[in-house]
Image (cartoon, rainbow, N blue to C red; front, top):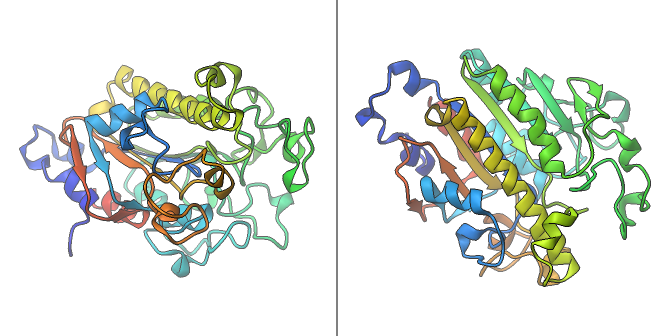
Length: 354
């Protein structure tokens, strides 16, 4: 079987490293994913107007994927491909709210759990409803707990990227009105229970506040964490301190760039925690977006697919080619880059090879 480029990048140097067999075979694994972030909306792909220092550091300290493709130009099919290693037509999730992950699918969480890993999911699920009472004609109840995750802190779908329980100003889509509660005011569910505390401010921070305790509690055993941010999916809103970083830009770009910078800050917070717990060298961290940038923001010239044609919902490069990198100190050589095509379907075989 041909090794995928991700496997080559992450594993080819293992034999030369002073690692025990257990350390080689059971690294911690974190899958980070942004939502609707274009190929050009990150510093390491040449955008010098956006502040993403922590993602840029990941790319510089590990491997940058220059031809990394989402399995679909929209979120739910791509998310399923990350977990199953299968193309969307194989696992039957072709769009948002039209299906849910079937319990018969084998996920990477289930495989790793069988190998002694503790598994956690955090953020936007979008592979079925996370509240059984909400399930209806559009999809069905299929939360992370049915797919190999020991614990989860999840929403079914999108939330505002700032104050995720409140509909933001100047927003009138999807039946929501400014100032009203967003989807009843409790879109997050933690292990079956609606969450209402610690919900104000940046949504990426809200998510990371649940990720870090999971990592601390798992530090003495291998763990797998899927951390799927809502940023920068609409409604895309940045807090005042993040908009201020781009005060000379228009409102739409202040919110988009500010939201991405806020997410980047939380990725930095995660990496600092791994260092503090002495877990950095035993943890491989992957990052990608789920598809190209939103068409509404691309057409306004705010979001960017870089030099590529298209955007979310299109099968051009701009809809499928996404920013991606991975870091594993001591294993992936710093400054590595590859233009060989990789995809979200490669995560499963790469990780399962462990």
